[in-house]
Length: 262
Image (cartoon, rainbow, N blue to C red; front, side, top):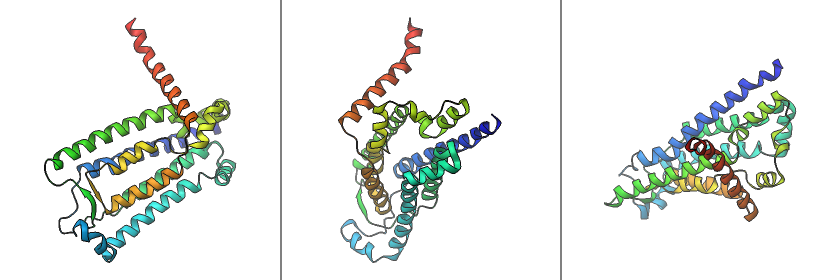
């Protein structure tokens, strides 16, 4: 039992790293573009800026750096999700395979966020500058971002957050209950095989709905949109299963309140 209990701190450390990275990702994708400043006024205007940007080294160099960071994240996230790599990690790390995947993903995302190079003098695709748009558009974006993140958190509840983070696998292993996926229904296994990113639409809302879409933000939104789109393959049967699971979990969460009311 002692060696098995040593797995728990490793899984918890991975979970804490992933949770902190998630909080930082909210700041990176929502708080910074909504509360941060606009691009520097000295940059090229929208009509001539895109052609000038192709020849401007001060714009191309940081964009190339940001592209490299995104490709590093996408490569890590995709490579470690392949069956060959998962089998290799399961062979050498056992039940910690999922926790290791989560930790490496969090580290790769931390690299993207910490070393991201803004391009303040680059051209912008759109910008809410004139009133009343300069007041109302950021407010509308803020509301939509809050709604999107609330939906993301609710969907994670449906998808068993503890299992996604690798905690449940270690917990079941310590108790001798086997692999959690072995207890899943065929409908759940079918859904997991179709969908690697359960919050695709909500993340797209966060990426694109901003008051100012500058050059580096456009690169981030385009590449992650392409990546999320390639990993999204739900059908009507999957959507019906998701709806049923959400209703079941909402019913379970409302039970204590009903008991108190009686």
